[in-house]
Length: 294
View 1 (tube, one colour):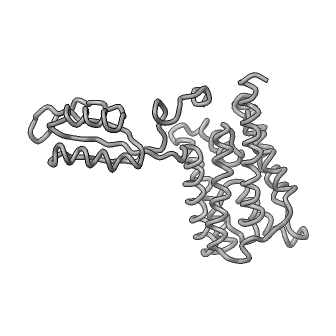
View 2 (cartoon, rainbow, N blue to C red):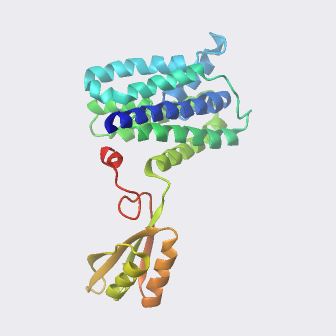
View 3 (cartoon, helix red, strand yellow):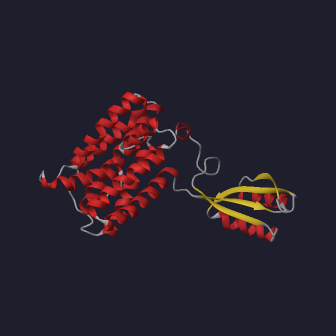
């Protein structure tokens, strides 16, 4: 099997695993405690509760998820074509399958803290793996893309936030304020977790060094840390003097040594340190074909 098909197979396996995590978050945690965090699956929780008086146990989440997504996918296919749907169809299908086959388990047992934290973490991991495979679970992001075709002056993200807000508002009217507030916590944790999955765990530090002894500091950093240093041309707006700002990316452990070197050579130097989520290149994460494809 060549590398291209191995990569595709890996992506689809990640979609299967990712949607399983999302289904566990909704089926085992959000649904039993009525946390509505937006999206079609969140709306499915509302519909299940409302329909309990009509159907015993309410309409299952997987049926509602398929029922809501089906017309959206048909519209997307007609308006945007086959390529736009792509892997998202598989992701949406797998989420519905997992919601249907996973056994009913009530993990939080009425504990909103466990539900919001653990549910948010599970959903975030699942969404992160799915997004990393260049797919989504359908729902409101597809709706937002379709609306954006007609309402160009709003971005897809803005439209999606508005649609999710409406679903959360419906959840508030059905389940009350307490459930909604914990849903906001779950959304925040899920968002941060998925961002971490997408952007990587290998955090680094970036340092901007403003000093008159830039040559000496750059040479010492190159020799001591074996890290590349870039000189950026700048001008002090107060003095009008030309400056050379040093820019250097190091690991978290090396930032301590970097600051010690700078202070030893020039105690008056101005150092700005910021977080870097992912660094590709020599000495960090190797730039592979997978990154080129992404």
